[in-house]
Length: 119
Image (cartoon, rainbow, N blue to C red; front, side, top):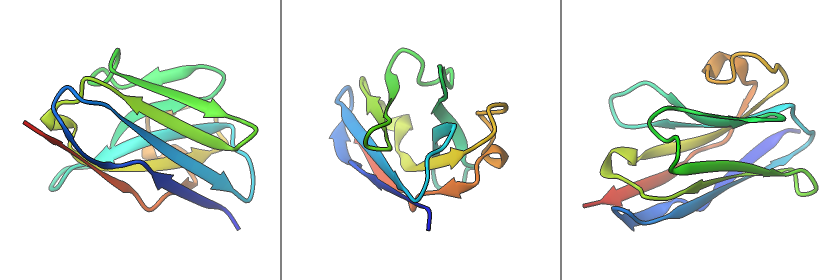
């Protein structure tokens, strides 16, 4: 049974940092990504990793996605956080290398972890 379990969310002040983790079990995946969803908005792409990394323009230069294959875990290091980064962050996993920024490309999702950035 495939499971994605996120951890590392919380409350942080603006310009602070957080690291999210997503541990996958049951199988390995070609693509792993992070999305986020704020209240009243659609789920949006944040970052993805295959043999290279992909970032949304809004987080480029501030967030870093990485992967530990031995642990089957993907990380999202978030720095210089802004209040507009406040959202529930979801880990996602898929097998298709294309369209890494689209929710439809992913087959499995975690339960989400709340990130709140205060002013």
